[in-house]
Image (tube, rainbow, N blue to C red):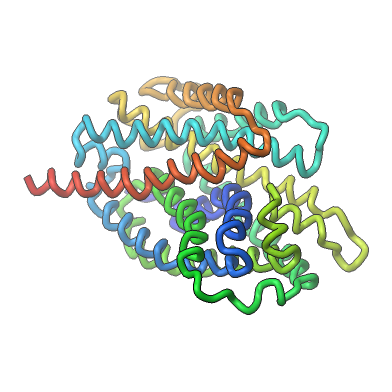
Length: 373
């Protein structure tokens, strides 16, 4: 079967969808954990991410021709445990998408419209994500491929302008004697990308994309980790680790301090507006994966080709059902400052790590044992 999207589009999907949680979590958590040396944490996470990519590639190599990741889990694990793996993944993604809807709206309001209402943003994002999920998968991947260069350019420009105000005494020399704290600070980078690697694997069906998969993603991770290390260094170098650890949105706080050519100020508004794109991509991606997992759990065979948007047969009704559950979660979440930190720094990372580092490896081991029998 000829793939209707390529690996570059999958990489763009992973990168764009990672930006929303990464800029929210990495700078603040890193500085709270490892102080001024925390900017090297994304580089520390690199070898562990490479190992995880090789593990996940080995798992995906167990697929049969034309078989998706979810179908393989159901086949190799059996219906009982396969339903636990996919059902647990879907449950977390429904909660996470509800959190994304509210946290994205709160970020938009806090940074641009302090007196605004979050619900128009929530409803619009839900409608856009549902439309994307009901359409062909390749449309979302191609959208990510289009958005990715724009967001990279924005990040690089922000980095260049931030470097003009950086105080290198705030990031150098590196602290010595606390490798355990630096390792702990690397967890968010690992957690975010390990999780998104797992969820993006549900988009991979053609075996052609499995060739040299581990090597390609390993090389791709190098500039990604370097980019986040530089962004963390720029944030710490502008404000210091103590102040960064207190900000809810360190990345956007850094942007507020940027003046372009000493004439243009307040550039954070268009940058924050651009961050709607990663919110849209990650929400639509996780809605697709959650509904796909539920369709497999309830015994449906998810379609491999394009379907008409209003077609609700073959379990496709679970797509709007999942979206409705996400809206309920968004309505139930209390998103004051303390709860935002609790969800983003503890609940979501812990659940993400449980899926990527416990549930998926356990599924791999059980599949291997059952295959031998």
